[in-house]
View 1 (cartoon, rainbow, N blue to C red):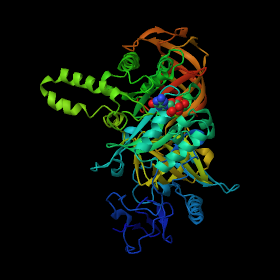
View 2 (view 1 turned 30 degrees about the vertical axis):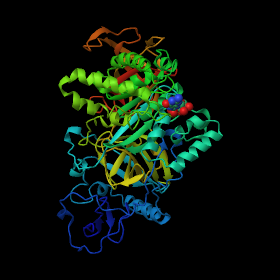
View 3 (view 1 turned 135 degrees about the horizontal axis):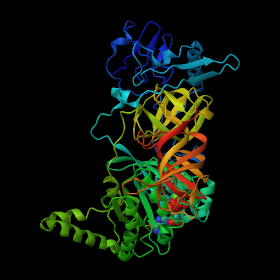
View 4 (view 1 turned 45 degrees about the horizontal axis):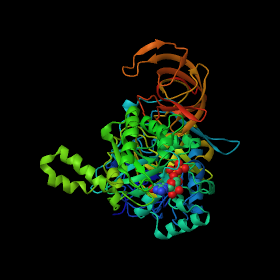
Length: 623
Ligand code: GTP
Ligand code: MG
């Protein structure tokens, strides 16, 4: 069905991205869709009441499918060369786009950007007074936003922002792979991509050959995620690897974290996007013990961090069972020790799944284990179910042979609730400058929804820009909603105005930018007490800033949360407290009560996480 356009005397509105194009344009300046010549010219903008359709293919649908293993932070430009995934504008397109944007800005009628029709752009109530002017000296567009924050309770989502349930459509699940160094996280990620067909046999052979040549044969699967020369040479992950695959129930975004203690800040940046996590544990003698060690084990640190990100469902993959001869005793030992610790982190027993496996020998990942040495697993399950349901022995016996293997455990995870109906907020984890005035920013939508053509605000740079296109799993998409992990291609913005730690938001509901905060914190194991003046690293979503404790307000009772002591002189391990911190530079932040993802804080010092916290009050904003 041809897409209908809407026209007023001087502009026609693109049916795909809602952008108002000049009447002389034969294709949309933003998304490039061809104007439908059959539509009569006297249709008025007000005539359109129905929401736009997004099932019309865009000319940008040039992107082929395949694995995207982009890297957060420094390795963002590395993609699998075998799979073309770029969504490129031709030089001509770029010219016309930028010319058009400049032309509009040159008009200086910014209100038009927000109210191109007699109504507003969907999702864009225009209460703000935004200014945009052409600098006479540089000819560059200067944009500022006058901050008049609307109340979130006033926000009414547009129809397109709320998803319709479509049968057979898979939801996106962000799954962080965490755990101590060398436990097998990247090998697991590579293996899952291979087993699900996202890595071809040919590519796998290539990895195997190259890894062998470098004397790193056992890292062949990990190479799919560990792409940089340094990672491959050192045999460790340094930045979070992102890849996609599909299970029976979910479209999964894998976030392969680095396990080495030096890269915990990178792990934090990636895994804050997680809806659920796989904690990979090395079962072999000594390795499990090193990971759980209180003075530096990352099994422990990652578990604590992931819980404080708000993740409450966890799969513990007890890996390298081949090394311990698939011993039930060893598995039970790991389960008992780690289980006790996970409960102290706040994980409920019922939200933890335990999967013994060998990633190397492909045991218990996507099917029941074929190794007879894992038969105790079946026996253990039989005993468990029979003790629960003795009358339904036959049914249960039939059921027990189906699990538990990793894929089953993944499909048993529940999707967390999504905030579709709040204003848009995307904390940016990674940025790529495509060309002048064109930037690709990656991140997970924490709240709201986004689509091409939408005007958005980038904070803290206060730049208003237009969403040119969206990509999910390297494929162009017409809409993304809370929970989706996407690449947002922005136009009309310089690369240095968007960085990891920036937040893309709704222009009328800018995220706060603060430099002094009150927080409720839990102090982890520390050797030096925290005092007024203590210097810390402050981590929040994908932002990191130097910070100083300026006040210790009170100690709190860990259970009731009541004040047990006012103005203590210092803080010790495991204490709960209210503190005030001053940041060296401003960061995008929200109070935890209004947005959890933007209100969770991690405090680090001397290469260790020393505290977890939530923002209770913003004391000083940027201005
Ligand atoms: P970091 O990212 O650096 O924290 O390491 P990682 O957890 O990603 O570990 P990686 O996947 O790089 O694997 C480390 C080593 O463990 C490699 O040599 C793998 O071959 C090996 N390994 C992974 N899984 C298994 C397994 O099931 N059995 C055995 N024997 N070795 C394994
Ligand atoms: Mg790794």
